[in-house]
Image 1 (tube, rainbow, N blue to C red):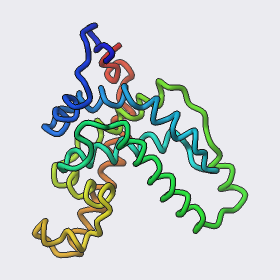
Image 2: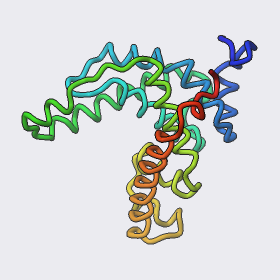
Image 3: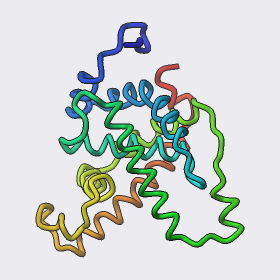
Image 4: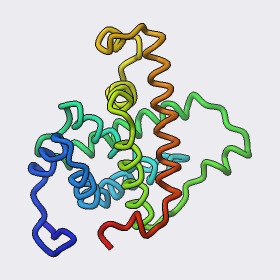
Length: 196
């Protein structure tokens, strides 16, 4: 079980997942800190040329967050769930890369980068903070389109919008997440270190 910032025992995964499902953002950070190293090791064990393992870890946790927040995802065996998401994500990204043609300049841009554990952890926390700053409707449409893989047209009726309006909403939500992430990244470092 591990200890939290004040030295007390951390709750087990089942409790953290229930808290996350109920909207507790701190539970996400606890789950990330607990499982990100294992997710990273697992992703490194299945190397894919041109795919950055840190991007894989961030995307795996974002997809898991989206699944849990919409009532899906793991309820207790989070490590197994995370491993499954890693496999699926690597397969999707490798398939997408096979369809892309790259020139020599792009090859240099996509070379794997090594980052330390603290920067990976900080990036995950920034992403979670940025996601939770978005309006609820944006978070929902991002979850359904990016995590669950729904097309905007299939969500239109559920959202009470036309298919075009749903696509525009999804586009704005993605742009909003990028901006929120950039804003979160520009905050002073002191403000980002909750558990220091």
